[in-house]
Structures are given as structure tokens and as C-alpha cells.
Amino acid sequence: MLTGASTGLGLAITQRLLRHEENLLILTAREASLARFAELGIEEGPRVWLRPLDVTDEGQRRAVVEEAEERAGGVDVLVNNAGITYRTVAEYATQLELSHQMAVNYEGPMAMAGLVLPGMRRRRGGRIIQISSAGGLVAMPTMGLYSASKFALEAASEAMHYEVRPFGIRVSLVLPGFINSASYLQSIVGDLSQRATEDPDDPYNPHFNNMDRFIERMMRVAWATPETVARRVVRIMNRRRPPLRVLPTWDAHLLWWFRRFAPHSLNIWLTYRMLPGGRRWSGLRRLRRKRLAESRADDQD
Image (cartoon, rainbow, N blue to C red):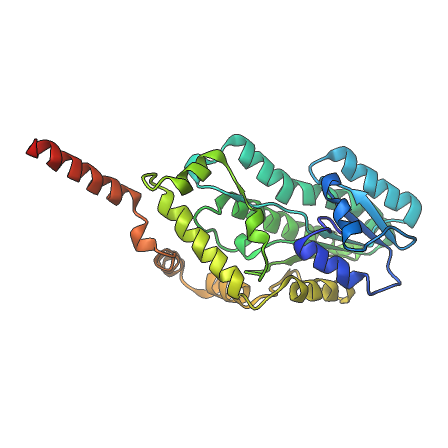
């Protein structure tokens, strides 16, 4: 079973799995996205099920898993790929944005895992693959909500790995870094954050603009593609002893080893120094300069 199967990395995984005719594939997407399958020539048949699934909807989660149990004998492999990205800073994050980000990227995958685990335990085997992100290793400005959801997924999935291993069930986290794709354009930007990107006098305007350019540039020049990461995901499904963490891109490897072995103070200092345009970020400095100029103008009057 694959969630978020109609676009991006999920679609790349779908297309690779379709080459293996012995598998029954349960491909899920939000109801509004199901039409994409037909547009791509992916049709339902004996070995391909297409099902609507919003991972935040408890009824839909239960329906798709129960159908798999009743008609197919259960789910042998669950790939939790569905996810969203909110772009905001802490000061502008709304309660709705906070809740929705966690509901899709953390609560949904963990709830899906909880539903397939009883059957996997009975069969004494199974695979749960959580598509996480290098954002689960390090948090960057304007990406805090997204990283929080991935940090949570990392912690809960690692605990689950230890809990279910005695039953022959393996849990893996896949942490890609930058992927050469247009997925960044699908980020959700709230009203306050959108105004900040458009208002040069907003104190967080440099944060958004510098990070926007940086992420767009990195995704454009990244070596990894959805297809190369999908190949690693499918390979994990077939490994007898899949690892807990898989780092399918070079930047994810770099972050992992740096976070693990570099002194914490050096880690924090260097990360801050390497932020794109970081020296020009100080909104307070810009505001002070603006107020100083206004004060001098008033004195001249």
C-alpha cells in the first residue's frame, strides 16, 4: 500500500512498482487527485487498486486497510509517502497551520501504521517505510513546521522499530535531501507569511526571500531525482534486513554525519553562518536603520 501515490516521489515509486507484475498494488491519493492516475495511463485492475485516501480522515484510513485485510489477506508493505509542506516562521504560524502540518505528516502515517500492524503481527512479518526528510535532521528558517512534523515522525518511527522487530516487522525511515523536482512549488504559504514575502518592510521578508531562492536553486541543481529515490525505496522493500534509516541523497548523508559527530556548538554556529544571505537577515538592524533615518529627518525639520 502506497499513500500519496499520484504525484512526485509517490508517482515515481508507483511507476517502478508497476514493473513487478507479481505485486498487488493499493495506490491511494486524495479523492481530488485520483483523476491523475487515468491521465498517466494507470488504471484499476486485478493487481492495481486505486483508492481515495486523505490520511487525516480516520474513516478513509480504516476503510482502505479493512478492505485490504478482507480481500487481499492484509498489507505486507506500507509506504507512508503522503505529506505536505507549510512555509512560515514561528511568529506567523497559525493554530490551523500547526495542526494540519502535524496531522498529515506525523499523525496520519502513525495512524496508518497502527492499522496495519495487527495483521502484520499475525503473519509474523511486514514492512513499514516512512518517507521522512533531511528536514527531520536539521531545521531551517521558514521550514520549522515541516521539520517539526518530520522530527516527530523520526522519533515515533524509531520507537516503533524497536517495538515491532520481535514480530518480524521492519520499520525504515527514508530521508531524502534536495530532489530535482518541482515539488517545492506545492508548498503551502499562509496569509501572514505571504504578506511577509511581498512586503520589503516586514522583518521576516529577508528570511522568506533568501530561503525561497536557496531552496529553488538547490532543487534545480540536485543530482537526486524522484526516480533515483524511488529505486532506493523499492530496494528496501525486498531487503531481508532493511536498515532503520536510509539516506538516499548526498546532502542527507552530509547532514547526518555532521550532526552526529560535529560538536553541538560548532553545528549551530556553522549552520547559522551558512544560511543564504544570513548576514543581511537582521530585520531588527534594518528597522533600526529606518528609525534612525526617520529620527534624523525629524531633527532636521
